[in-house]
Length: 588
Image (cartoon, rainbow, N blue to C red; front, side, top):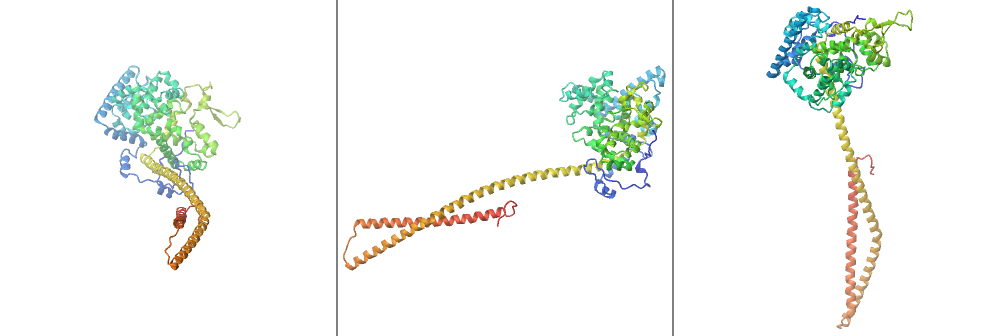
């Protein structure tokens, strides 16, 4: 069970030939199995900063067996040097306090029997060196430090080591916490509800720290309102509160969130989780190409089964003793070290996973992946097939009812074997940074696509509004056109009557003119001065006036008709111009 596949870093085996692997980007929905490795590198590898990578390379020695341990320590030191002098002085002052506290613990242990006083063998001299000068131990005793941490930091001073390594304790931050915990938070109801649902709550209550845990979570929700509160924070905070007081717990929680990058796991976009999933995919692709390809072909994405691993650091599955050992690794090696446990679990279960298809495969990844580390005391012969030699492993829930295997929860799993096997996976910080840069490139491209889609939707909406406006204008023009046509019809109906009336008037005028000429002719022939009767002159004047009015009216009507014809022609041209390229109107 403890035999592992070769876990030598794939970057060190340059002579081995890597197969052409499919491109699997956890942030993308579509998986393209036909993409070549060269095309993958050409399209997804970002232009990383050579200077940043060189700086990161200088933080660890490649001759060691644990790159992350040394690299994380040096990265924390660089960040520490960038802090304000007052903050550095406060952290150094707290370190001196820890040294005194550790010395008091050691003195008590010496008074009661030395290294075995707490029921376990403790190398007090080594841990004294760690507390007094952690920098020197990292630089001169790195392999021994790595082995000691992998074996587990003694619980008697685990909290001290965590805070010294992370440089988290600050007096000003503790004072700030004491103020924050007195304020109200909109997340209080949710925190109280989730506390009782957390698997470790009974252990927290057993040491009377449930109120302190609530205060820490509430205070952080006020300290970082952009993140606020999510349920996974309780799993992160429980191991901390079990090893220190509440103000120190708050300081370390803030440090883990800011300096170790845990905050990105709980931000609304959960970008940090996607980064870890992408790095996990790339590492699995490198360490076990066959298993990686099998998962891809079965449609299994890491987000389907591994999200809870990284959000809770396996706290949702493992008992507290195992989670504390995982935290020893995370605090000293960084959040990325959780990938060692994930990759190791996949490698050890490779044979079983390769024989399963989608449904069974996903079920195994969620529920049975950890069974490989169940202790032998919880393995029994398979009663269903006597003589087969097969064995069945109990689930953790069934273990509680089994009297033959009664022991503490941590003995259910082979804790030392889990940590030992996982630490054989030696991750290169430079490679992890390259993976992160690749993810950033993919993320930015996907985000740009989303923005383009939003812009297209907005443009499409504007075009729809413009179409509606044009349709409204067309309806109005069409209505006006109908009105003009109606007027033209009315005029065409009225025009013959006016023309007939005009003709009659013209004939009357012509007749009167003839009559006048005849009268004038008679008057000239008679050479007599005759005066026309007044009635006749009046009648002539009236007829002349009527004739003038009719002529004027006829001229006006003809002008109006010509104007309407011109308007109709203009409207026709305008309609044709507006709708020349329209797919709705077909103008002949």
